[in-house]
Image 1 (cartoon, rainbow, N blue to C red):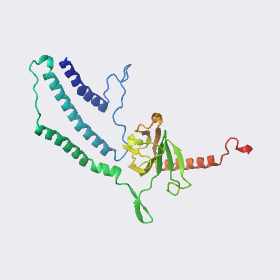
Image 2: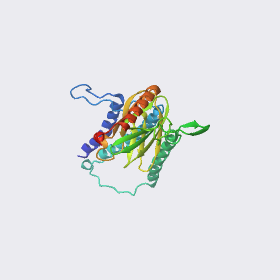
Image 3: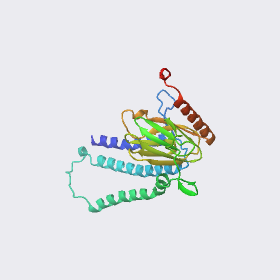
Image 4: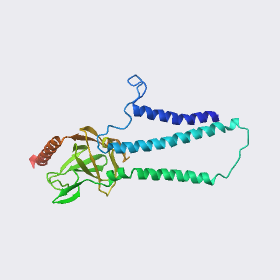
Length: 281
């Protein structure tokens, strides 16, 4: 029975590696047939200038951890196969272990984690610390956000800066789950939460940031391709988490300005439209 379990454990890395290979190369068998496997399970299309850096870091960590996973799985298979109790009549021998071996397998993971921390420092700084700047009245200041995104159960509420470029003034535009940004521009987005932990996730822009109640945070990026993509929540935030999905539209500056102007006009009209029953008052 031990040999059976050893083969079963060996099948885990074999099937796992094959699954990753099929996903990366879109090589699913029987695609398009009656028993078709779902395709396009690898990384979504990248439309961010910083995306390749994130993808390379992801692939590096995946490869490193994959080698360790396969190596430990093969070692597990070897020991289960070799020391199957049903085929070894020799009595069990107990030992106190090796201090040298314990030191080695403590130092190696620590060294690997330290290497990963150093390897990704520049990518982390670009994504989380080096916020774009702009010049206002001759002074260079952190770039103002184009839009403020508020996560709440279960939607993304958006607040765009109006003509004055400032969020929090009377000319702001309000929207829900419909994020528009111009292409080929440095964009800063302010994010916050109204209730619980959410995670603001733009898969195609390689942006994911936890939205913490009581904190205002900022994310930034430069999109280099127009199109319509997903805005999702990557944090289980309650029973309606599955509904917390928005639409990201990346478009030219001309189209973005036209959309913004149209939305502002509609918002102004709706503010002065009498509600049902008001005419009789």
